[in-house]
Image (tube, rainbow, N blue to C red; front, side):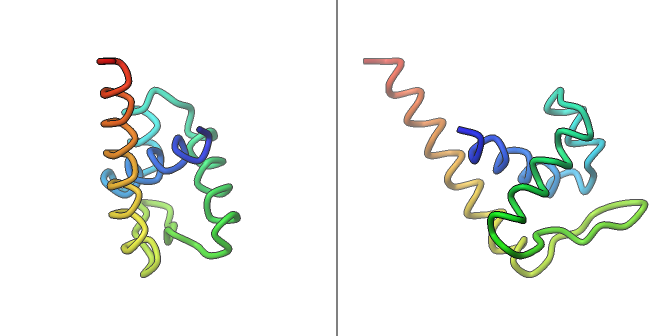
Length: 86
């Protein structure tokens, strides 16, 4: 489940272009958001984001990965909803 959480955080950072904005939206600390993104990038072995003092942007891999993550999150949410209806 930690991987799914990291994916949710990554998608939110990509949407907002900011670690701080994503942290606020997800009610997490900025350091938690940063750690989850760093762990996800370490696991993949490649950066997903370009960081600058004012914002973040997606790398080429990040562009591909963000949509896949959004699809996985949607599928997981649907599975959870279906399970609660049984």
